[in-house]
Length: 308
Image (cartoon, rainbow, N blue to C red; front, side, top):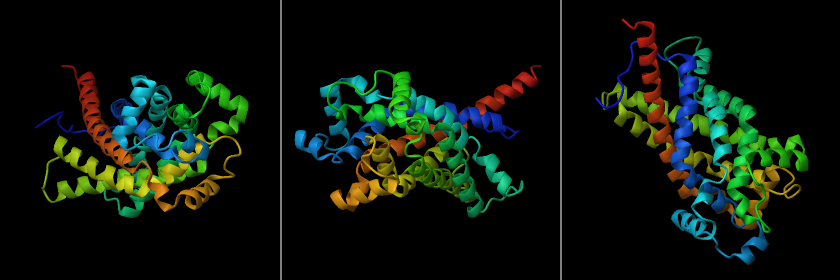
């Protein structure tokens, strides 16, 4: 068997909470360039002046990455990484780490969880996570997109970004896009965690795989694809709205309607390929790491409690 073996004692809520945040940070380190490429493709076309100045600046995932490296240097692929890691440590810990606990709460401790309980748990932890981590998400998106502005960088550092947004747009600016982000993350959490849960349960139930790395990999890959299909439209609106100048859009709904009117329905799937590459690979790295971290932490805990 590859990796750590399952422990006799189920992982505690604390182990899941810490393990989820750590695994998500590792996944972000691996996949961040794809996320940055996704953001650049999503915002491309929202400004007619930008389009006129740089027609079709980005073409495809790897074309976007190559253009960024050529024009801005390799470091540009990791713009906003600090805020991204801050986001994952606070965000994933809540939405993923607390998912099982909330699911058990809705099922009143029953081991059998129906699809309704799983969906409800996913929506709940997704909304809770946004309430905690929204400012970090706003700063991350602004950093990833800032090359589109003229006259130098928009922000000089992560702390400067928090201060500048709060000063120029008010504290509410740090919570910009909360509504579409709650919607997006309710969808993402449900699609990601529930799909992973269902695929994994089916593989184990029908003895297609055992509870090891190949099973976790397959479940995570399937969850990544389903999540991308469901969440892409809301993700594009969230990115556009978070990155917009004050007053550019009246609301997230206005942003969506403006996109539909000016760019057509396909605009909601801009950046789909990097979204899938990023979410698919992110899910694989995160879930595989998460499962292994839970087992490693419980094994270490067992050895501390019984050293002899």
